[in-house]
Image 1 (cartoon, rainbow, N blue to C red):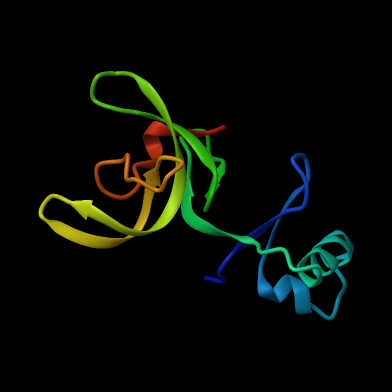
Image 2 (image 1 turned 90 degrees about the vertical axis):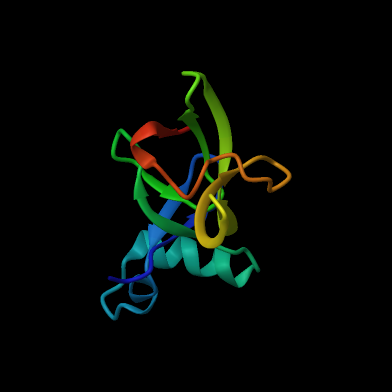
Length: 117
């Protein structure tokens, strides 16, 4: 599987792409015309987390998600990659954090309970 990225060009223009899309000899005009100049301007794409939310929408690094916790209250968090606590272990992977980067989700991602907002 190719690693998938997303160029968040504006609040309404978000383009998923792979490296192959950028070097494809058959031009993918919208991707190559919009994403390549955006990257050349120094912007950084976000990485696909490999999960979809409960409605089938792809979840990317930095996405804000609403998620369900034990007391049946929805909270918001940001999808983050890095070290997180799982019981007595420190693990690396995807988790939900607050704006300061503090872990909110218990351990890793549980995408069936989330919605990208």
